[in-house]
Image (tube, rainbow, N blue to C red):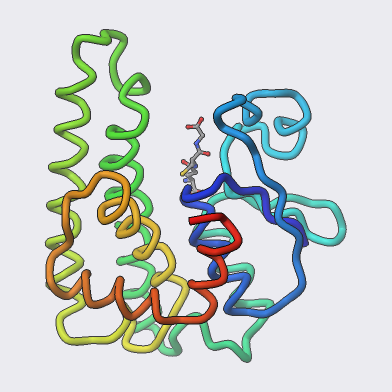
Length: 204
Ligand SMILES: N[C@@H](CCC(=O)N[C@@H](CS)C(=O)NCC(=O)O)C(=O)O
């Protein structure tokens, strides 16, 4: 398999899962500074011009964190990356969707790509501020549902690397701080060998 990524992007979540699973894979960097995501070579891999994209060994490509992570979990059932039971499975997906869709998609996307939300450059600071509010509110909700649990579903699951990549942005990029339980989750994640390796291999 080959993972298309940009360092420190949301592809870090999939990168961590690949390391957790231990299946062999290659990393292919998409250089955002050179706008490679919009060039034809990469658009032939992912016409959405985004990372992550996971190319399987038959050449087919999967995109979107939720889809890729479910694929990795179901093809490596021994790793138990999706909790058993309807309630726990649904609650884990509920948190995962919220982290990716709301904290990332509505919150941090405003911070990193304000131009996607307004045609007026003069509004960029207001859009970014709104994004920070959405992200902060989102972390508060996740903090409550995490409570004293080690991981979102109790045990480590596909939702945790997603929470980690948005927490990484909060802590390292935007420096907005994290509520207590999310901070503990972040620290717990950074202790995992798979997370350390993914960070190191992305030069972070
Ligand atoms: N919903 C997608 C989001 C993918 C996404 O937004 N990727 C960002 C990096 S975090 C990207 O590739 N952005 C390219 C750009 O903004 O030009 C997913 O979950 O994979």
